[in-house]
Amino acid sequence: MVNELTGKVAIVTGGASGIGRGTVEKFVAEGARVVIADLDADKGEALAAALSPDVCFRRTDVSDPHQVGTLVAAAVEKFGGLHVMVNNAGVSGTMHRRFLDDDLADFHRIMAVNVLGVMAGTRDAARHMAGHGGGSIINMTSIGGIQAGGGVMTYRASKAAVIQFTKSAAIELAHYEIRVNAIAPGNIPTPLLATSAVNMDQGEIERYEAAIRDTMRADRPLKREGTPDDIAEAALYFASDRSRYVTGTVLPVDGGTVAGKAIRSRRKE
Image (cartoon, rainbow, N blue to C red; front, side, top):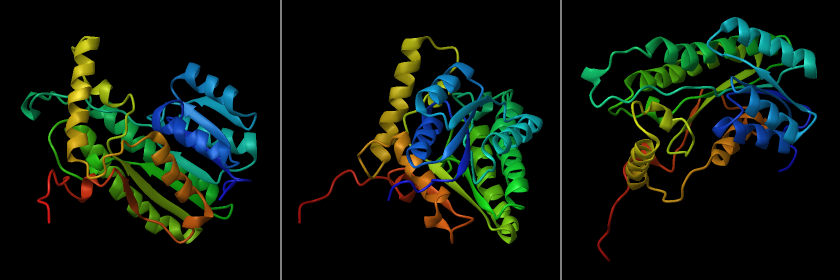
């Protein structure tokens, strides 16, 4: 199918790079008018200029609900409406060798971006959508919010909170024909993982990231590497009319990771 989003207006937070950028590019290719929201003005403005006159950038800190409300209002004013809200902006936590060593110094920052930002984005988008025929809200969680594991505990907790919030919001907002779903990416190469490393030089960061990705790759049933475009395809599905009877779902896009670990070898029949 082509031009699935023709006539639709979308906001993508964290849209200047990584999964957000992939989603912006996918939506534009499918005919949407898009507002890119991000803290990185240089990347955001450059992406908007490179794509289309129907794309604009607005610098937004999603941890500030006032800025999120202003973002939604600006999108409506610029393009005349809002049909799709992608709450993608997120930050990782600091990786500690043991949870006992975690000083929780980044707790409030992580929760403000990953949870409060999603809640404010959902609320403010829904305030408009409720009076204009409904819409689609897509919240980005993580397989770290589904699958327990060690490390980055606050990040995992924040992503689990996004899942429960998404399901709860879907129930309440269904009355207004607003669909609320979540995508749980896993093992997608983006800059986010490297940000969890502290007190490391560039070489150490590269080795740290490579070691984690090697472990992820070994555990993943599908051996093809995931890409931001894979996540963007899932976002397109939730944004389009193909998912008009789908709400309150959490879709892992992870090569089968949460289904179970890869089978390393099999005996020949």
